[in-house]
Structure formats: structure tokens, C-alpha cells
Length: 358
Image (tube, rainbow, N blue to C red; front, side, top):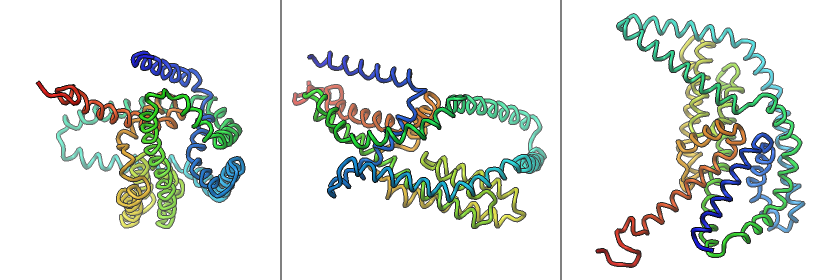
């Protein structure tokens, strides 16, 4: 088969795959979650195999341990989390009123020193920005959580995902060998190299970022609670979980915790302590946790990751967010490979490879 026909055939396979993912996106969430779990736990299963454990037993042990850890965390944290969430919802109108009054005071002080026409223009611009942001967030949330499908997805996650994860993890190596045997022989070494690079980036980012998020969740929750902030557990856990998206978790936790502190405390010292907890966590993340656990070799720029997650969530909801990082890593590796080929081509050098320039 000629190179052009091979290219057309692979493009057709990719197009059909994307079309099928889009067509069945409403039911793919538990399968995607099971695939993600199997991918993340495959190194642990391989390690147990090298120690003499059978693949099926290794899979059962790993998934069983994971279920026990999750159950233990839920049993210990959920009651406290539930109590704080209910209390926060109950007092939310009070907090909103306090924040509104505080904002009115700031606006009054600001408008007293600024030309009235400028204030009116800024008010109109701010109103337009708020309306636009609300519309975008509403659309994003609507795609992310689509009515009754949320309940169905949650139930399917609880029932189907463990089964899918078990079988995918058990058969991971044999499935990989089958796919490798189907690669076109002429391009197999190049495809393997690119797949290895993609795997390194996905694994480095996801596994490392999950550990970073867990560490930050513990730090934020403990620090804010010890600082005396009401609902510190909720804010800390949410900030830690969202830290898997670079900067989003820490910035969100800082804004929310400072607003709550301004409403709850009379002086500025407690507010500064609350802010310091988040800032110390962010400094530790940027200077120690992320460089050590994620590493510079991952090669996924934070802006690219944020865009991929938002785009995936807007297009396919939670399913799109699961696939966002793998797709972003794949595109990054393919772009680098295209640049590498371009630098070796006559388009860049100005002469045929190995030839003399005119």
C-alpha cells in the first residue's frame, strides 16, 4: 500500500473513532473511568507480576485495596463534609448579604474619588462581563451535567466502572500486544516511539498531579480548619481536588477562603493567616511538589492543560474532561514530531536531505 493510501486509511480510522465517541458519549463515562483506572494502576500490577503474583490475583489485590482506601476515606470524611456543606448552604444567604454590603462600601469609597461618567462606563462593562460569564458558565455546566443523565452516570460509575477496570487491568498487557501486532510494519518503530512519549507525558502529568492534589487537599483542609475558618474542610478539599487543573484550585481556594474569612473574622490578622495557608501551599506546589512529582519532562504547559480541560468539558462534559489530558498530550507529541520532520525537510533547510543547496 502506498504512503498516501496508508495516510487516508489512518485518517478514516481516526474519523470513525471520533464519530463513534461522539455518538455514544452519553453512555461512555463508566467505560472511560474504568480505562483511566486501569491505565493508572497498570504499573502496580506489573510490579506484583514481577514479584511472582499472577495477573488476575494482582488485579484483584490492587482494586480491592483501592476500594478499601476509598471506603475508609469516605467513612471518615463524608460525615464531617456533609455537616459542613449543609451548614454552608444554610448560612449562604447571610454570607452573600455580608459580601454585598462589603462590596457596596468599597464601591462607595471608589466612586467618591472617580469621575461619575467613568464610573458609569465601568459599571456597564462589568455588567456585560458578568452576563457573558454567567452565560458561558451556564452553558458549560449544562454540558457537564445533563439532567437525568447525571444520576444514570453516577449509578453506572458505581456498578459498571469496577467491572470494566478489573477486566481492562487484567488484560492490559495482552491488549497492548494485540494493538502492537496491528501496527503497519514500516512505521511501527516510529509509532512505538511516539506512543511511548505520549504515555510518559500522560502518566507523568496525571499520576503526579493526583499526588499533588491529594497533598494540597490535606494541607488546605488541615490548615484552614486549624486557622479557625468555618467550612475550612469543604474549601480545602475542593481546592485540593481542583488543583489537578494547574492554578485553578489554589486561586479558587484563596478567593473563597479570604471572602469567608472577611465575613467571619473582625480583624485582619486571622484573614492573613487564612491567606497564608493557601499561599504556602501554592509556593510549595510550584517550587517543590510539581517539579519533584510531575517533573519538567512532562512537557504539558499549564495553559494548554486548562484549555484542553475546559474544551473537553464544554464538548463532552465529564467524559471530555477525562479524555482532555490524553488528547492534549497526544497533540503536543504529534506537533513536536511534525516540527522535527519539518526541520529535517527541504522546506526548512532549503535543499533536499543530504544534498547541496543551490
